[in-house]
Length: 127
Image 1: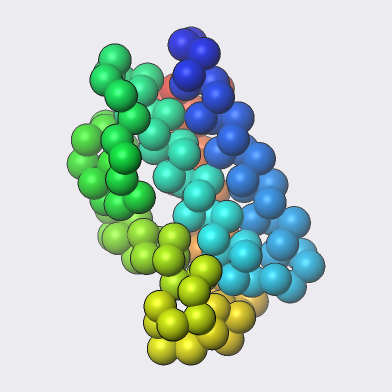
Image 2: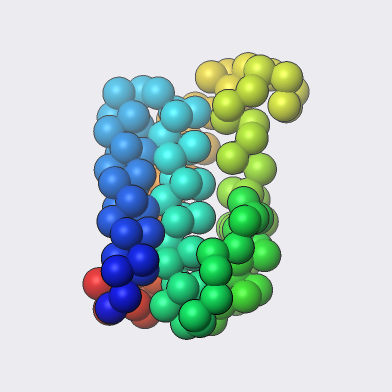
């Protein structure tokens, strides 16, 4: 496996750990943010694994998905997760403060679905 793919995967796994840590600490919006980051970095690792091009400078998970072999069954979730990159960080990016938008129930679903995507990618790459 190429070194750059390993680095993106390693950071993806660390971000997933951050998502789990913050979920257990009831910092749900931070957990959701780290889920988005973990999936984005894993998709970029998959992109690099499947091509020799540069990593796309995009935060759109669906754009990354369309340019990789990831299963189409994840596309709907990736569309939903993409805005998390912004609305978890800025108090004026959505209808309310990020800490009020993300709760245990919706973040649990984000974490569960993110893990499913990540498992698929990790298996595909062989890590």
